Image (tube, rainbow, N blue to C red):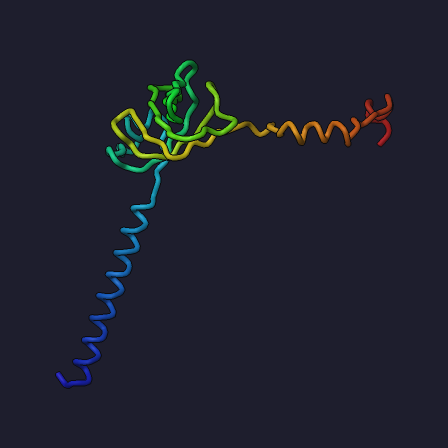
Length: 161
């Protein structure tokens, strides 16, 4: 093999190796930052495709806060509560200030680490609300500035446009 071909071959092999290493490192980094979403039933029983999270895995879980399950530590900000959907409940422990919309019977999404098969240590809790929610300040301002529309009887019956 002449020196010119040998140099090209070495360069091509180095390029392929470098590209492979770069792609491998990118995939590894992405897998470390991926948070999979589970419902409480999927967390306990596994997803339909058979996947089940492992202890120590980062994940997100969403469900309804079980009535009567919220327990607050009086000495700290630690709150423990249960989240359920149609199946078994999962215990979530959170150390911090919960969102204003958090309450029993309300939907939440928690992001954290699986401690055991039915316990999650959350580092973020998001409270969900329905699409009709309006902050009280905005509702009050709208009442003051917007008068309800007045329709005549003809307009109500659809005769006049």
